[in-house]
Length: 337
Image (cartoon, rainbow, N blue to C red):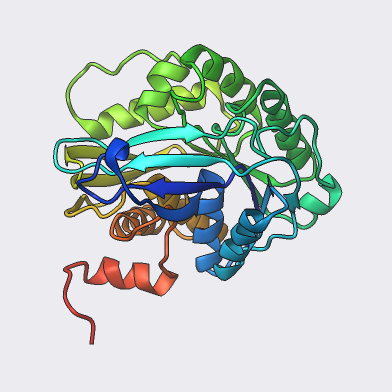
């Protein structure tokens, strides 16, 4: 098992029930989530020693966040308290052909308002095997663009492996802004979550046009990304076929040691909650890398973990290693008794 630090913003999520429009909702379901926190929870579920670094207000909401993380076994030693507010996001649940929709309310949050590094970096990275962060964090402010790079450089200097999920969010920054910063970050990254859209639109890699074969297309994109950033040891992503908001086909792929690996396709129907599915996938990949599992085992496990996440409400994965492996063996929806 590895020692991991993830860093980012955790928010309160307020969601409608399926079939309700946000503009007409009389009540909203509350949970907490955020890309890096979701990955931390997955890895803690799998038995790793995980700490989540962030900043929340010093009030009942901040304490609720702490209790939420601790309930999943995530250390909050590096969770800072202060600032004005907890970031929020609202989600209108998708149904059928109507997509889910997200509204962010995070401007001026305790985390987003940070202007200088407030953590003791020696303590933050002491004995750590892996540091995970995503492209959401530098999208939050001008200061966070530089702070993200500084944190990654510091972790790298101490010998920590860097995991970076590009996680582009068009509601937070433009493609031009993201492209500029991500190209500065990737030279320090060891493991990267990046798919074909990231390759084309953020890294300016020409579109694959030889045929419609997804496997060959992904091999091409991974090869081209690795040419640009030979320091990156592992690339991974999912390929999703969207039949509706409540039915998707999900396949995972992995590029490691210049070889391509692909999982079986999971038909997920019905989807209970898609939010956090990508983070559950990242958590599964990072678990496999930390445990030095073989590549096919890594991608099978990670994709199964993501498929399972789609079956529960909330942002985070709630399954253990044994439950994911049992699902891989059976996966039929039968009663286990």
